[in-house]
Image (tube, rainbow, N blue to C red; front, side, top):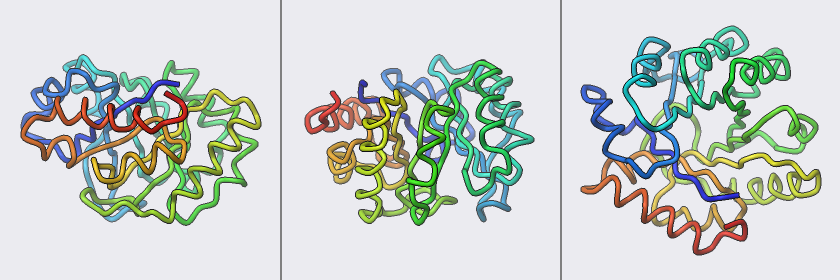
Length: 222
């Protein structure tokens, strides 16, 4: 599996999202954090912005739903044009049904776990998802420091995927930078969400390429 970089527009200029999307032409995805002010304390954007950005951006959208009742709302994000839609396990009442519905709408389906949530209870669901997202910060705000305590869980998730022959991407989100990406890649992650490390750089496109090179240098998967 190839290393992939997904810049988070949470750290971009919301007044110029189309331009910010164009500023990272070598990115694999644009990570879109949808927060409802309930599941997490922050409030960001929703379906209308995703629909507009999907039309304007050349890079596919990786929508991360940090919302209550994702069973109701997730399929609509796939229908709106997102290439990948991720729901949080602790927020979903019917995760299998919702993951299948996301796929039915033509998007990749992801399941997210917070730092304190163990991965083993979800091993049987690997066949129902295209991506497993392990949060490396507590969700809700950008700019937080990477939590090294998640590294063993990344390794365990990779072990489970290898044991089951699951072709599932392993994404990490939170505090990913030039100082942390190699640790996450060594542990087995292959998709990296980076916000301030990309959009806080003078050259966002160069930051994407640099992060990718770092991860590829140490990854056992590259």
